[in-house]
Image (cartoon, rainbow, N blue to C red):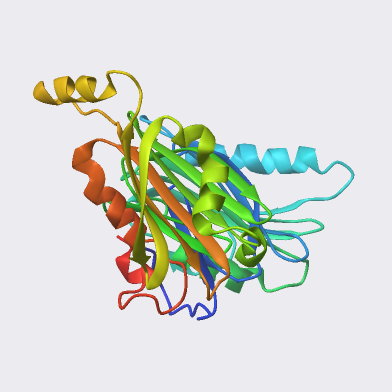
Amino acid sequence: MARIRREIEVPRDWETFAWSGFRVRVPRDWTPAALTGNEDDGYFRLDGPDQPRLEVKWASSRGFVDVEKVVARYLNSMRKGRAGQEVQVDERPALRMKLGKERSSLRFFGWRSDQEALGAAWFCRDCGRTTLVQVLGPPGSDVVTLAEQILTTLEDHTTGPWVNWALYGFRCQVPAGFKLVGQELLTGLLRLNFEHGREKLAIVRWGLADVALQGTDLESFLYDKNKKNWRHFRLKTDVADVHGHEGALALSGISAMPFAHMAGVALRLIGRRWANNLRGAAWLCEPTNKIYHVEAVVDPSDEGMVAEVIDRIHCHEGRAATSWEDQAS
């Protein structure tokens, strides 16, 4: 976490955005406009109601990174990319903060054209990422204060065994070994797919549950959405209580593929893992009018992990004594 030269107050009503190991506090009306790449190399942009407000780009490196050159290339690209518009560069912006020692070769920068931007770039010795961040605002706005508030809360990697993911009011935590391999971010649907070796984990949220369940029930709705995948398992559903929702469903099953069980037993006898067990849960969260579905195909030794992923889903305020923020590593 950043160490600052003076106290910087961050508004209490800001919310957490978390993606690929990054975590930052931002105004509630900032929403994701671009999410690309993976844990090693990627980019995300958050937009406000009127314009882009935050951009973060990162790349992993095992060797020396010349952060000065990274910033110089970026500022040169800004000049070339805004042909016909004057771009004023500020190489020593008035940002009054000091970031952690693990962020080496820290360089602040700024530029001004039809927008104003202040940012920072650094190489993190702990995670091996080179990160470039910039906060944008309209000309004449207080971008300095905004940039200080954003950079104060920005974390560029996870230090514990759980990785935070948070966007569009959705919050979950996933074991650090699982990597994001796919996503669906649509109106009324948010889906994150993860993999760790042969193991798979999917976390899904549907909006407008009252419309989605009109004329059907939760179990029938889930079967319709997952019949292509579930046909490969001998699946069982049981009524459960998840986060206080008594009509939830517990999902359990084993692979129905020929010889899958014998293969799993044989591999475990020689100390190898075999992902052939389906575990998960689904529930209707009435306070938020959303449907949640967590499902994993794992080795039997990881069934407890699936239960903990479910426990770390934040579906509505006040659902647990320990807050999602407190659970974060």
